[in-house]
Each structure stands twice: as structure tokens, then as C-alpha cells.
Amino acid sequence: MTKFVIWLIANALAVGAAVWLFDGISLAGADTDTDKIVSLVIVGAIFGAITGFVRPVVNLLALPLIVLTLGLMLFVTNGLMLLLTSKVADTFGLHFHVDGFWTAVFGAIVISIAGVIVNAILPETS
Image 1 (tube, one colour):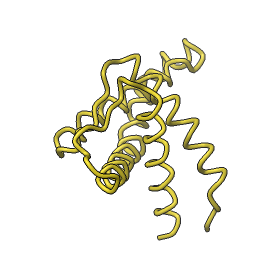
Image 2 (spheres, helix red, strand yellow; image 1 turned 135 degrees about the horizontal axis):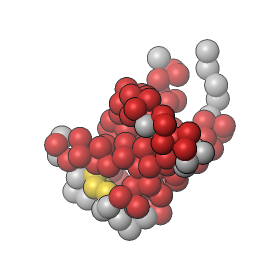
Image 3 (cartoon, helix red, strand yellow; image 1 turned 135 degrees about the vertical axis):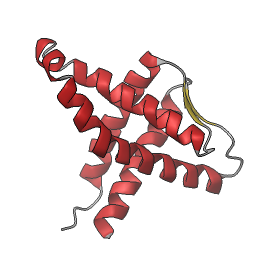
Image 4 (cartoon, one colour; image 1 turned 90 degrees about the vertical axis):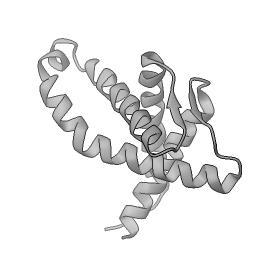
């Protein structure tokens, strides 16, 4: 249970970093800080679920392109996962929005880097 909570906090902080850094990634509709935190946690959970279940399938299908581009296609698939997260979050009324493909790609890079940093800082549980 503790590992799940740490994973959820790491994803929420990573998504929060992308929202803070890019004007094209927004979290509208959250008036108070508590609403923003709850929205970030839910969006982080959605992003984690999508990257856990959908991304492996997409990466498998894109494997020839990943090999051909020496791994650069992974940035594209990560950006697509962030766009999918935006669509899913919008259906749940969370008002998390990503404005375009390149914003999604750069946002996914920031989320990946922030996730690595947060996971390095937070304690590892078994």
C-alpha cells in the first residue's frame, strides 16, 4: 500500500511540474489549492494507468519505428500517452488539457525527468 501511495505522489508531482512549466498544459477549473492537489493526484493516477497498460502495447506496435529512429520514437509514444491522459481526464471533468502534440511530447519528457527525480528522493519500500 505504501508503494502505491509513493507512486501516486510521484506521478502527481511530475504532472504538476509539467503544468507549472508549460503554458500549453493546463489544469483549469480547480479554484482552491485542495482542488488542484486532488485533480493532480487523479490525473497522475490516470497517467500512470495509461502508461502502465496502453504504452506497452503502443511501444510493441511501434517497435520497428523505435528501432529505426534509435529510440526517438519513444518520445512520441510518451507524448501520445499524455494526450490520451488529457482526453480521459476531460471525460471525467478534471479540466486537464494539453494543447497540441509538441507540447505533449515536451511535457512527457518533463514528467519522465520529474518522476525519476521524485522517485530518487522518496524512500523505496518493498
